[in-house]
Image (cartoon, rainbow, N blue to C red):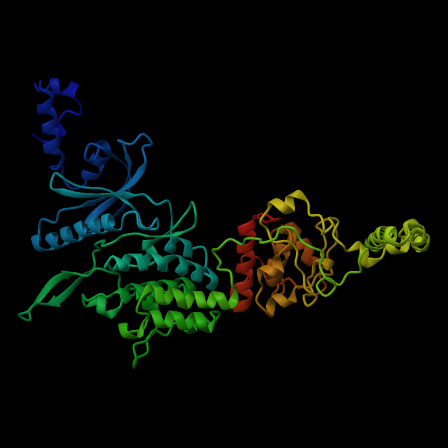
Amino acid sequence: MLYSKVPSNIIGALAYGITHPTSYYELRRRTKCAYPQGITNHKLRMNLLNDRYQVIRTLGAGGFGETFLAEDSYMPSKRRCVVKQLRPIQNNPQIYQLVKDRFEREAAILETLGGGSDQIPALYAYFEADGQFYLVQEWVEGDTLTVKLQQGLFSEIAVQELLVNLLPVLEYVHGKYIVHRDIKPDNIILRHRDGKPVLIDFGAVRESMGTVMNSQGNPTSSIVIGTPGFMPSEQAAGRPVYSSDLYSLGMTAIYLLTGRQPQQIETDPQTAEIMWRQYASHISPMMADILDSAIAYHPRDRYPTARAMLDALQSIANLVNPIPPTQPFVNQSPVVSIPSPPTIPVTPPPINQNTNRNGFVIGSLIAGGLIGASVIISQVLKPSQPIAQTTPTPTETSSPTTSQIPETPVSSPSPIQQETSIPQASVTPTFSNSTNTYTTPSENPTANNYSWLSQRLVTDEDLAGKDGYELDIMRNWIFAIHGRQFDTPGLQDYFNNQPWYQPIYSPKKFPNKLLTSLEQRNVDYIAQYQDRYNLRYFKK
């Protein structure tokens, strides 16, 4: 019976003389695999895979199979999942058997790695139906690094954070005696819900075919697992090692920093080393050295383990900032004590002096009770009376030093300051952008000077106690000194009031290469600090 003649439901089957339900469903099952090429996808959408997974749409297709987004009809939540279908290759049984073995290997790997890392998709099921093989795994909502790169090149700090989050995953995978073999931007997804990178496609088969020699010296077809440019020479020869994955990860990082495919970067004709630094001059020498070690031509010259590469990256983070970028800042003491004169050079208000003298008076009264209260009181009250009557003069209350003191007394923080984990104000006299020169959005800010952001690395201490408005100004100051204009009216108005500001570039035509590596690092650091504590005044 042709597939077009099979009734679509049990009621229609009665018209064809099929009276037993078992006969009907058996007929449908046998004819599902007989659909001509081009009809399969349509029928998959009309039927449940394994009587359970309802296909929503096709995610991708290749020479060896297709990948679908589906819903699990057995689950109350109808959770979404990825279903990979291995398409039979009838004209080459040898190749089909190799592909089948790789497909089964991926399922076995996901089962082995299951539960050990939330940055690896979980395996839900693996089954065979109608001579075809299916693998069902967790659906990761997010964007691949390839998609993310379309928004612009990654900064050095962004690549560092990506590697620091991925290397522990590779350490876990290698600890299970597994080599991924196909690490590249397409196989790393930045998950939407938390921004973490997720490693996908373990043991996936591509259409890349290679020719190798058999024991008799004759050429024979073989499947090469990996992507040209992102895999090292030993993997292309069919002998991958653990550091092969580190090579692929290093090439992925270089691609994100330069925007150039590996094939677009020259190699040294004598050493075969990849000459990528000329396309990423803004990268610090320490970071460049780490990537060079990861992509060394010979495995013995690379990092031996993912942990070794991770330690090298963290040593850079410790030199720049003792708190890792992904570690939340914990304020050890939410109650700020009165700063000493060397820290905040502000003259204490007169009321503090009166309080200290009154305390001295009370202490004297107690002591006077031991040797004669009447004598001590007569001596002590004499100097204390004018102090009790002293009030600040209009000149004192309107002095510039007093007006710059924050309204909230530092010795008695507000409940909001006590409950939040945002670091409190901590200003040193060496910074020209101290809290004493800060202006509010309602004022006409023209006095702030953040030129030091182009001279040294910013730290949490520099940003502590500042609100979203000032942090936005600091971050965009770096762009403004290079002549960038801003679409946000508030930002543009601020910099228009700066005597040094000379707008040259529109926001879309501003060349980011004008920023030094230090300036780019400070921009990224301030932005991460703002996101960490939700300190934004202007919309992104």
